Length: 135
Picture 1 (cartoon, rainbow, N blue to C red):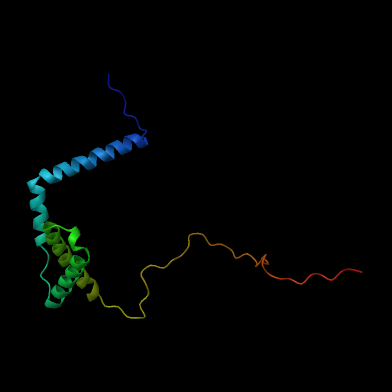
Picture 2 (spheres, rainbow, N blue to C red; picture 1 turned 45 degrees about the vertical axis):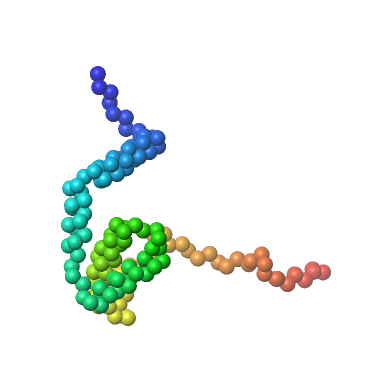
């Protein structure tokens, strides 16, 4: 007879499931040539950059390699170059958006709960004159 599924998810079950899912994704990701081909196709579909954008992206890559070069392998440096180029195209689109100094931000901070201001109470550190003795 089939047991009904337990609706209670314990921390142990969640951790086990998360670990096994992550391990399975790692194993599948390293052995799947289709996933690698899909990644390489998406990485090469970056729109062409102007000369100024290319020089900015190469300067960013050069700065990263200068600071952290020994930490990266050659494959990682190639991936960094692709990341810098794709990031640069996003930056170009963002910079192309025209704004004026008088433009308000898109989001305003407004607290969900309005608190009433309490009357100012005397601070413990404040020096008050002692009351005159009553006669």
